[in-house]
Length: 256
Image (cartoon, rainbow, N blue to C red):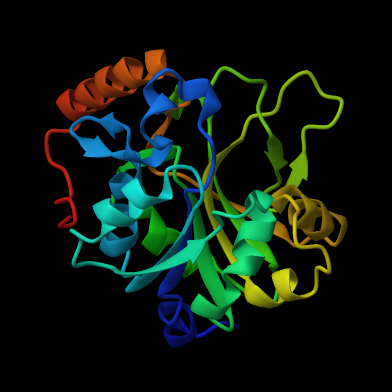
């Protein structure tokens, strides 16, 4: 049994912001993708605000492409406390980026968020829901997952199946799967420390956890928005406006 106090201690996170954003060109010819505005706020601030609202106090952000712009932008924030993990010399992929930043992260479990997707919370904070559902005795990683009917900007066949206990398995050879990875994770730090390579994908750890039935899902409550191309910006903004008209009472957004 995991104590409430133990889960409340998950107050560190990493936001992956070092990508090149090639699918977002020409916008990203002169601007890093995490600074693209959607609904009046940068993608990076959408991620950071979700973490603050969820009770996370310190966040590591990795940087590579047009890194100075991201660092300058983050200087204007007072919450959360920000550490920079500098990947200017070489991209390390998603898993390698986290491993490289381990000194600024927690010893136990911490959150990982992508900077190219975000969500609008439904009832309560999804970060808090993930924290409450986390059980390190059963799980090595837990992914926030969405369904197609609560997603915008994603037209793929889906990523995972999830059983009644919340255990995730890959779509594999199936034509489609009902759950989409929504860009947020709770993970154990020791998994990254055990990998010898410096450059590797988070998928390496997903597959390892799946093989041991220790990859779990937490279903998103709200609206997930994947913003991958210039055209998807307007699509996301329209979805937010439509969602707001259906849900007139919203949780207050965290301060930037």
